[in-house]
Image 1 (cartoon, rainbow, N blue to C red):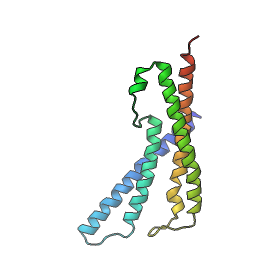
Image 2 (cartoon, rainbow, N blue to C red):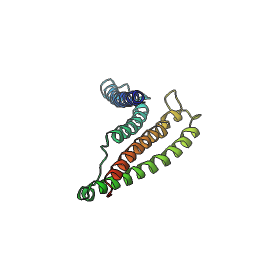
Image 3 (cartoon, rainbow, N blue to C red):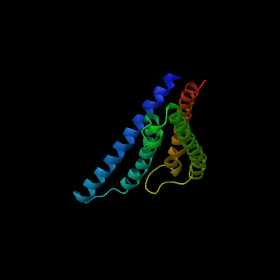
Image 4 (spheres, helix red, strand yellow):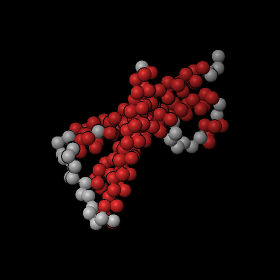
Length: 160
């Protein structure tokens, strides 16, 4: 199981790097070809837009894994370890609910767009939207792992 988690981590990191690099190169190539050679590409704007969407959702997965999302911890910092664990449980529950909703709607929107082609590229919009349920599933798994860890802290620090 640990091997699978490491492999998934490497795949997500590689996809995030590849999507950002591809987006950067698309935009750079478009600027150079348009303003230097006066020969713009028709498809690069569209591809850069789709790569940006994938990059954003992959970044959400990476941030959830690293627990690096923005949080206001003023109240939680003043609580003991059980209070912090309760806040962590609440945050995990909220993340799990959001991920579940996004997963359900992501499946629907992906399925609805499988047969609709992109304007200038060779693949369907279903591929563009497929990152939504994938990211939601990954973030949901991280939320469950975080909730289990917070529950263990809450339970261990319980008064006896």
